[in-house]
Length: 536
Picture 1 (cartoon, rainbow, N blue to C red):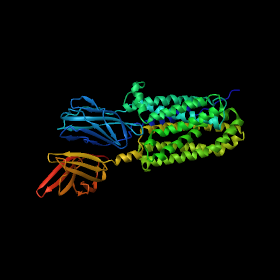
Picture 2 (cartoon, helix red, strand yellow):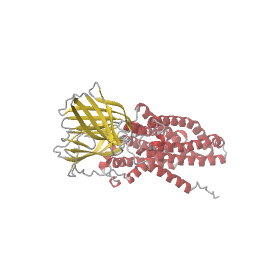
Picture 3 (cartoon, rainbow, N blue to C red):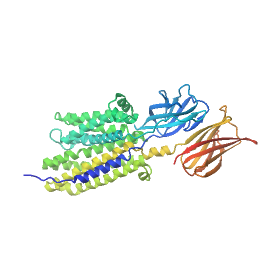
Picture 4 (cartoon, rainbow, N blue to C red):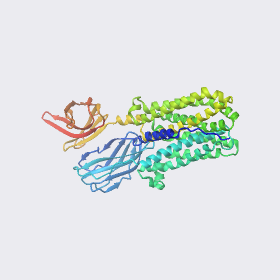
């Protein structure tokens, strides 16, 4: 007898997946760690070649490429550096001449994401700047990274989770559904390839360099390297556990694979850089392991319902008793991580990370609604052998699996979006400039370095680097392009020798002229002036 199969609406499914892909790709241009300061400051003019170059970031980084472009267009590699917390100290090459220099850098942040940029400084007087080039987004590499991430999630949760389910929750003959084994192998291949893709992204290399040993080495040197090592071992264990053999060996291997695979996700990514790590890393582990237990049981359960009604009913009973606990722990860990990463609910709408989270929450709402319908309307009749309920439940589980894959696709876009907590740290970073004249110099700090209420402070020194004895100091701010005339704010001398003006309002972002009027004596007034960039 021929059985007519029902269509699940392929055009609608394709349109839905295309929409998910588009939403994910729109968030792939974001960086993570951000530059918060440089010495010499960006755009500064210094009288003599600096002995050391400083780059400060919003979180710890590891250098990948450091180069100095000279006025004549030549590039010198800067292979020596010292990393002190979030600041790179880079000795300058000997023999730097007058003119404009460009310091280009490419680093990888603590959560494993590469960041690149350039700063400009001039010796003596500004000249024509050498071309450093712009940081273009390599869409083939970014797209491959995203696809590898999705495949890795499919392998971990449907593959390793599926093997665990067949050995502990829903016994199946052999290694369980063929799709579980396919997902496991897909995850293993994607995880290994993602190491090279991480190296390509870190070095800014094209997809053609996928098999370059230097690229693989660069990928492994990031925090993603340990994740790949542990997760690959977990996939290998899952392959062993999925084969027929000793029941004890298979169950043990599947359990270790589940634990190791879930723990691997806590070794890199946003959670590796979020504080407090004693809380975030276990939360990531709990989130991953509960997803693996729940999602991993879907394919074996669907297979059991389709092949054997009685066995499917028993499997359904065990599944329905366990899953509410998994969902509760999953939601609790997810809410905790979201609260740490997002902080301000307004960031859900104003940041790419928040937009991705909202998309994921929307899909989860649909998934949980479907789960509730299955649990309260279909599970009971299906467990009692109602064939109509069994067929409906089988189709519902297939739809659940498709929604889960869509959630993985959305969540994979987080690889390219900095969390709001990182943006808050970057926004709070100060803007600094160094002002130098024949008689005096000043290190000026505007904190935070963005428009709005700020505090301006300055350390004022003589030309011999000794503290300058001043009677009065006034900060004068102006922005001619925006039509803002000079605003004067008197500074107060602090016990540490810093002159500071609090409760200063910088009304808008852009380039501001900062002038420091230093009253040295009754008839001597010294003025220092320089431009500073204020962020939005």
